[in-house]
Length: 584
Image (cartoon, rainbow, N blue to C red):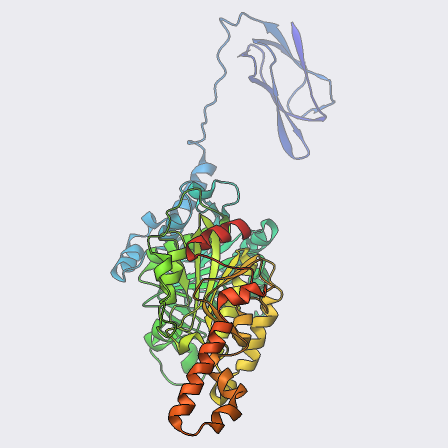
């Protein structure tokens, strides 16, 4: 015979009546304490012989409850649990609520996406994150419209309040699970046209705070119509005190921010897209700081949505950094971009282009610097950004022996490689991007200097040129400079962080030539009297060519290296070896 005692102070809610046969672990009493019911179980199998108290009586800790008469375990009933997790009504409700937001529950909305050639928000995120890694934040949220709409209607029509977001790993198959976590989010165009509601603003706040706490990159798919005027549940007038924009902007420079857009992206959605470090957009995107209704409401006339900020405008003004054909390509580009931040590949393929044949022996013959880049980086590793603007400056991510590197290169096919205002701005933007992402930089220099003349000054070149020195002089990532041909004047110094001793190394290919300014200009300026004294045009031209040739030989790479103004003149085939040894 064994007494079962009360484990705590409380009130008896239920006692097993005498004669009840119980198994070890089965309930023999329930005590209420602090508004909660506590189960008291039998430690051994037995039959209830006596109850010491009645229902409703107060019990002290250690006080006797029921007396158990021991029985053989062979005759004791097995403990049973009539409810399993799948049978529970509360769990079923939770699953049902989650299912409402899945694509399978919204076939008509999905069909409309298909008609437009679009994927759903969940399909894009499933493609972006690694399988099974996604943890969603706020999937049961609904629009803040309870005061004007039925709750069941809101649950059915506004799942997740039009924003699907959470944390998952990206590229874990390449870099492992550690260090590949990423905050991902997508407006859901199937919910109120992907507009920004009060609740999904709070969801963004939560996601951005998590990104800040854990130093996680953010990838944001931004298709949607901007602010939503129909939310009425929250007090306020202007709602300009929301935190999302400041929180997202505050992440810039500390973690990578990548935006992807397909279709319409207006107002607040466009503001968040424009805050990203890199903007990827489909060819049929329309991105603007207001949609048709706001433009019309401002008295600016009726404008079709397709006329607002088309890709064919933004690919040339710097709004869009990478143009892709569709959402799948956009997601693929985002994953590739993240990889440059995430680390090195363990396997890689060497370039197939012959680097020694890229720069012609004839110093006056132009060439495409893209071919020089292809000859230096791992096969198939390049991802060029802003390819449609500032053609005189190339900015691209790539890998050399698997290691990420950002490349800034002059392109002699445009202005002979001279650095104009647009080229300088593009270089500054990419320097800042690589510096904030922790990606080393390689400058490939072939420039006669900064583009001079009143038109360049009118564009603002003095300021953008100065920015190249200011940003270059404050780079925190390792960087190096390789002169492929021309290294003249301030433009060449700007391609080396301000001077040839600023990079970890400054080397030249054998085709390199140097001087404080372009040879022809230097001759015209430095030998003006001698040229003016020539008797005729034939003699003047011959003298000019002689002086240029003399200065060229004086400024040849091997002679510059003999004065130790650069670190070495190398076989172009050794470029990859220099980079991998010194840009670690």
